[in-house]
Length: 389
Image (cartoon, rainbow, N blue to C red; front, side, top):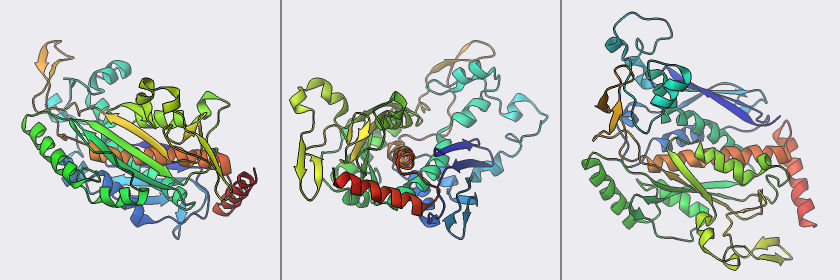
């Protein structure tokens, strides 16, 4: 069975819920690491007051016993601490009261899903749209990705994320190993490896916030330790780079994705883009460079996956944009909801976990079995087969 998940829940509802199906049995699940990943998502310079309210932790309420997966669906719950202030407004039962008491939203905010969702689902209270379309849902996706990440780590696969750019401030390039990137970015308020860049980005975010505006940026995810051959060239929907691109684009506010040198390849000659193949008797086949970001023909080639995503500025502004009331059809200045000036560092963490999920899914498609023992036997047999090629 293919690895899959569903999430449910609203930003001001009682909880977020995720169901993960297809995880093998006998995988040791580290609960501290799971919650550590959730807490990483809440950090980052420029975050709003919601992060002070929520202290995300995940509860496993199915599919795990005595610290190990059972092979049954894994049920994960992340409670919303802010729910206590919304128990009436977000109650599943009908309530009496005026639109104001129900906090009905009839003024769509530019850049959000409000108006499109209202039109699509014929909803006259746009709160029904914004409650689900909120980036709060990414907490559930990080929880799911954190489980997938532990599966990959059991086979020596490591994942790092970093911020490449926030607005006008770009981090200098480097050639650090994945372990160093993980260590340095975890100590950084904006998830960069360079302290000078960190200070510049913090000052820039302060400037943007002071002007009542918001700012986006570019984040990068690196996956190291992958075997050759995850994904496939035989059908469009089996190409792993395409699946990763879709997953990254599905993150709230992401508007672009590139793999390897990405769009830069459109400016260069073929000899400056493609990675030469080399061979060593001990290591086998490899590439002399990694401009293609670990992929050829929709499949991993043994080099690290390198994928970047661009996040637009958050559309909720303290100098709001113009919009139109869906009731009166009159123009107004968009209302302000609680928001962040910059969520790029947090987006880097979210991106790590959506990439982890897609890689884990491809890994199980290739080496799948019902238990960790069966998967490991399949994996080791494949590595031996590749070494003899």
